[in-house]
Image 1 (cartoon, helix red, strand yellow):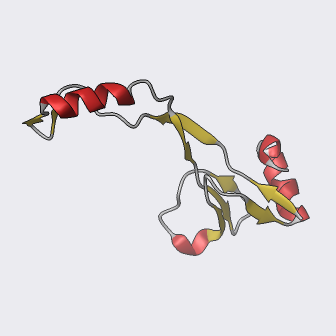
Image 2: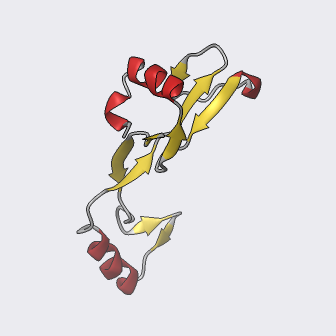
Length: 98
């Protein structure tokens, strides 16, 4: 059985930008700790991929949940069938199937 791991966006940085958060000035210790976070590389954020009942594959979550056939959760290895693998490859996600 094949697995599909949806693509990720690598822009999540675990640091607060600046010296103020929610209109509160950070203490000296918090500012020092915050500067350490700037040395951490951005981490991935998984994108959900939706298989609709019409056979369409999209990353935009539909407002009508009855049109969703299956959700491939970002950041997870999702087991897929050969039919789903064919549809995902045709939609441009072939590189994410193993």
